[in-house]
Image (cartoon, rainbow, N blue to C red; front, top):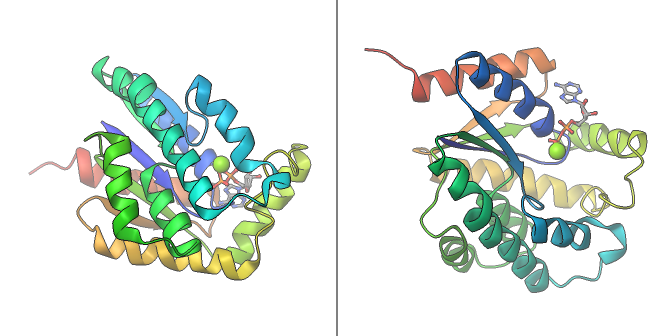
Length: 213
Ligand SMILES: Nc1ncnc2c1ncn2[C@@H]1O[C@H](COP(=O)(O)OP(=O)(O)O)[C@@H](O)[C@H]1O
Ligand SMILES: [Mg+2]
């Protein structure tokens, strides 16, 4: 079982993925938590380049290829082996981030992006993708407060430093992309309390994997 979590900065992906890990463990499953960028050894080097605020001069194509390199390594070295070992793999961002950020955000052609994603994931698409949805002003406030609190405003703040109009395009992009991929992608409102959001995600997971009758 391979589940990915998507959404703009500060929607609560990292918070909720921990809750979902505990939820699966309480059902007796072994869970492997991972993320993009940075889910592999080489990927952690790529993550530093991709998220540091100083790297505002990355061109859209350079950014794209770094993300794809991260993904190709992550799938081959980490995700596929963990799935083959029988674990539930929960991933914080994956291929849909490329479509939305590099496509709807930076303006690259989404058909090209989808083809490159196909190459990078080599057939390994998620069984389920959950998009956490929130007003970008709210998400951005959560994310920038968190970055300051954790002392990573510089190291991990490149996207938080983007203009609000960029974040609005990303949010709309996620919703558009979700509507085009209804078989795999579900959207959950992430504006209420962490516990409410967790309940929504749990409902989606139960309907997808544990529905009876
Ligand atoms: N439902 C929520 N309501 C209020 N604050 C939240 C909620 N979910 C997460 N947070 C807080 O907002 C910040 C961003 O959450 P995080 O899980 O890091 O988001 P993401 O990984 O999507 O960027 C964190 O400080 C987190 O504690
Ligand atoms: Mg996060």
